Image (cartoon, rainbow, N blue to C red; front, side, top):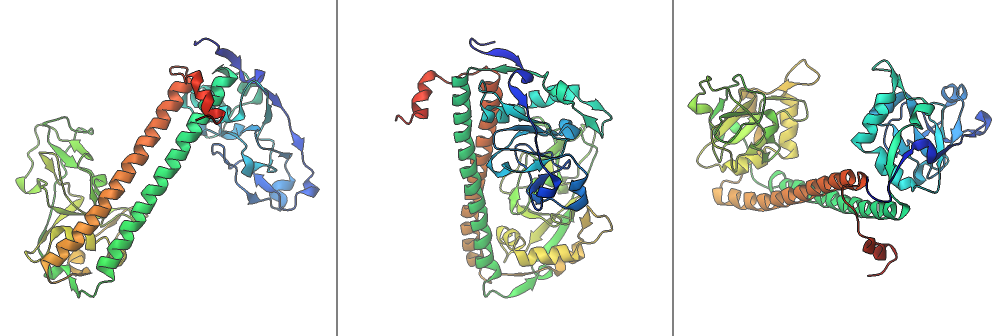
Length: 404
């Protein structure tokens, strides 16, 4: 353990306190019931009649630690934020004041770690579906606590990382919205005449689903695509499974750059997802859960993929998908041929539209990559800083004091 850190029981850092509330004074007080199991966020649903009256209720305030002992194994530990101030909770939620040796925001970070979740779950008693973590056991949990100054640095750095994550998520959403708007304006709202795919395609062929190893392929191994490889207007060739060596795969099922793929079986929202393959690992094959569209010479494959991702095309696809299962739908070759898309007669005009949309799509990919990297950074920081594996130098305190 690093110098200055201490091993302490939660009970040494918390003081149990329940500010009881009269049922008669409730009216429409925000209420968190036993259904709550999030981290640090409490619902503000209205308290209603008998479902509340029969319970022993307590009011919670900003900065208090609250946990749901009925759902401890689902991560129901949190620190009440400003939005939770004044909410009432049932007696299934022990409430604690935080003592001066620890920052409430530090607890919020600690509670989110897998290590804390696992330690708490190991003390929960009862059946798998209805386990309880008693207050006396919760307060016996042992944690490693850094000095208060280091807690402040950790909390501040991770708050800055969270701000970066929010900004990255906003950039990603803005890029996605821009791409959708451009696709609708350039294709769906164009004056180009609508034509059925039967007039635009020379063929539709399918793949093959052999026995796989159930894992990602190693370099040089053959692989078959998973459904997740085909996403609306985006292809991910890494989403595949290694194929056993003794399986003979038909050459026609080999995936090539430029292929236009469509999922023929998937959930209602994703059946008929279409993309164009821009790059693909060698020896990667089409599965029988997807189809390959072969456009004629006067149709750009990339334009075909973009046009099939417009809202109007998606409505046609989802309306025509068949199936009795609530989770899976199928679309047939004949249905695909009946789909109609607007298409400029000039292939050059099609390619100009595609170039704009590909540039916008590249921005989406870049924004998504940034958001993923920030998320991974935060995960590493939480793991290493709260375990004492990495420290923040004391010079960081100048930032906390507002010194440049």
